[in-house]
Length: 400
Image (cartoon, rainbow, N blue to C red; front, side, top):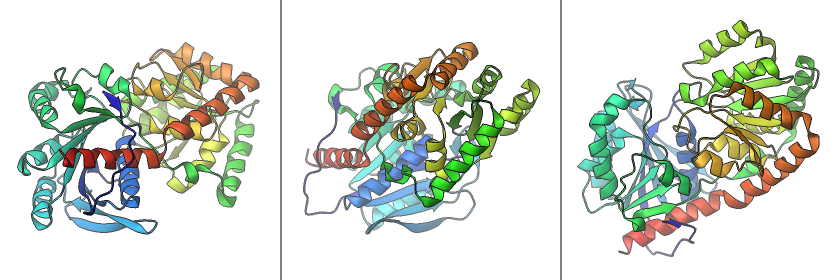
């Protein structure tokens, strides 16, 4: 496999790319959805004609133009019947893909797995369209459904023209990527981000200082631990809340999801609710304040469903060290233990508390790892590099 970092080639014809997404609602949006929006924006900035097709959150389909500086991409939300087993039931998504291709053919269809609906849609599109898959993670929880789905998953993966992963560890740690997938189809393109919006402005500076002031009222140290993500089983927030019994700091836990009420009840039961702040969903415009206000960022995920951790990259770009779990996948490629932060065994409450305390109590170590984390994030994970690499890959496929 190769780490794909080529510059885009020139072409007289504007590339038309269909990005086949999953959701577009606050409750379901996670790291994959955030990555896809960044990718669509990055491609549009490189003058690619991008359509982002997702399942909406109602029985009504709609489309809109998303502005990206002087460029735009089209977001199409298809009518949806509901979400079951983390999969949107939206037959209209398949129909819209077919109709849009008939009206003006796409050069590339880019699927993002896991997403069974995208797999289904790809079967109805002409075979001559170049197909690219980004493999975000294996399917972990729905084991019975996976047993039925896996043969089809392997088929569409082997038929794809290219399979992208954010780190080499995605390939080595996966048990579902076909072992006979030819090496020439495997491409590593690190996730990227424009980190400019994480720099403090006058308004976010004010919010940042307010968060720090409140943190001093919660604990003697005034230290702040920040964690962010959907409140779902694989994020491991229950382990982090448990660890707060042994830490003198405030935990700011951002995000929302089906387990939020359960986490709040856990904090009360353990007697740590006074130092665990549940913020709910945090507006993108305010994220810079939270990342900059914290002393340490924590990603306590407990399953391979967490395969990268875009949020830890954002914290690192703000000069914050990260404590994550040793998942032996892309998470540990991004956060390098002993260089940009620390890593602890999965579901080990004592080890998690100890690692957080080490960083909170050692200013010199925390500063050193934070500085190294920022350099690592900014130099290796830019949105421009990610977008250019995708365009280069698309052109390469179309030239063969």
